[in-house]
Length: 489
Image (cartoon, rainbow, N blue to C red; front, top):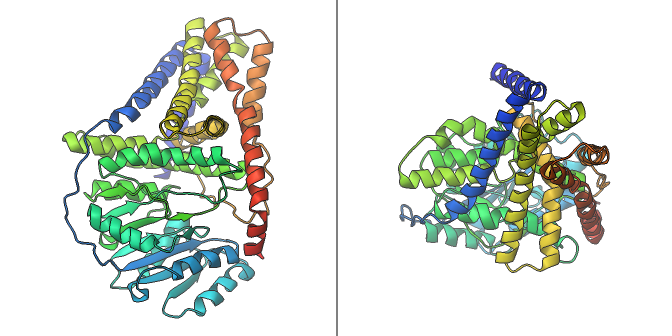
């Protein structure tokens, strides 16, 4: 596996360098990128128009028995305890569910021991596990929790350590399983205190569920998103449990479940809320992991996903593809080629224009998705614009994540900080590099063609968009500062 990754990295970097030196090669590469971009732009609305598949009523989930798994790593203890308290207070028979807390690789006893003491005060209700040297990040932790699941459990539920679920969460989950006859269901992620502070960030994150997950629900091929998902224990065990082969173990599991013939549904009802990333840097790290991990998953299961099949199976494969490419961006390559060609005067006009078109198409895809979703949902114009700014601000990280995953770079699972103590809100170097490069090229008088000038102007947008998003997250962090400090004490 390692040798294949290294060969892929050498091949991709070799093609990129050759494209920069030989405009003819770059011309072909940009044309391929444009075709892929247009294909994805056309595929997303297409899958939403395909006919839905009705539930088959394969199983009866009238009385499921749940095992709730909460994986933690260096989380503020009182934040985790607040999550556990909400899970203990469920409107569901106490003997019909258990809670397994799996703390992995937390070195500081002052962080994990308070959680252990809380769990010990509820014997028979919560099992607390603490392990060091756990491999596979969250996937490894969840597999340990799975091994400690009670024998009579029918479903595994994953809840992130910062999510406070509604009292009727398990009842809603049981109703959804019974109504849909699905093997697993996914509820949307939602966030506290966003209405007045960061509605644009919230709307940008919600766009995935309202667009990609909603379309996948029609094909019973929803991919998991890590929290608030309810999975048949039989299905989970039969596909080998969780895998740490990618940094998005949830999406990887969803693909394997779909390939094994299990049905997954999206339940569009908010049943719990967590915390947004508390700084722009944390939001970027989160998006980088989501995007790069999904590209890893696509590469890992690409042959399975793209293999031709019957009409319905094709629908399922297409919606899986659109979910994995929700934040996919190849814009880094045309940006690099356009910069080299303009600085060295090597690229001819057609090649540079094609690179510019690829950049503009990536921007058009962002605008069309966010704005169209906002208008369909009846969002206020300021919310739509802030959501658009958030997506544009995250575009450089999406482009870098896509390239790194395609090039086989070694990716690391990064836990999003929820303590509130590290949120500096500083801008990443990507925004400054893109902005300064585009500005220098514009001021240097390089672009003569309108398309090239338009592309360079588009490249100026991520920096101001990042500043606007950073301001929203600062306001959000200030709003929840007291609650975060209280649960972190």
